Image: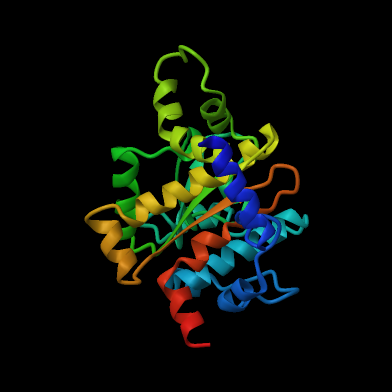
Length: 259
């Protein structure tokens, strides 16, 4: 069965189909998001009101970071004090607890911009769901990004599946295991397997949130919120949004149908 699955993947590649492209966003997606070459900035207020614009703001912020042009916005004492009475983050980031992936820094955002929940392998459970729903319902945040990263230790553990993992680590492994098993079917080498497992884990978590009842699924289906996935490259500093999580958005399907 495993050999058959590998042959099917190779056949699909030969016909021109491929795994999610993590090197660059497609031109069609760039047009859909109205990304501009040479642009590095997007307005903060518009990002809060429009999740598509918020996505563009994250992309531009990461572009600044990756090209060593970070401006570290809204990080002064005055910015801290201005947020004393409340918060209005324009994006929720569901990220890995890995210390090499500081969300505000890699997206070049400031105080009050991002509502962040982090666990190893960005594995979610009831407390995570409640945290995300709080941002959506109480703070009216409309953009949710599941952010994986290259060389993730939790995903590596799920790929290797060591015997008798310590304590509650097995909980993380079991949560990521389905993505790791799919990656095994899709790839030939161990290096490719880990990268594929990282992507598959993000995609699975995106789909989980899109179907999470009762809050997330209804708001997503009604177009009130966006839920997308991305992977951070530790070497380049770039965050690449997974094409499949954008082309599956209801808004993208409408965009393509109108073309």
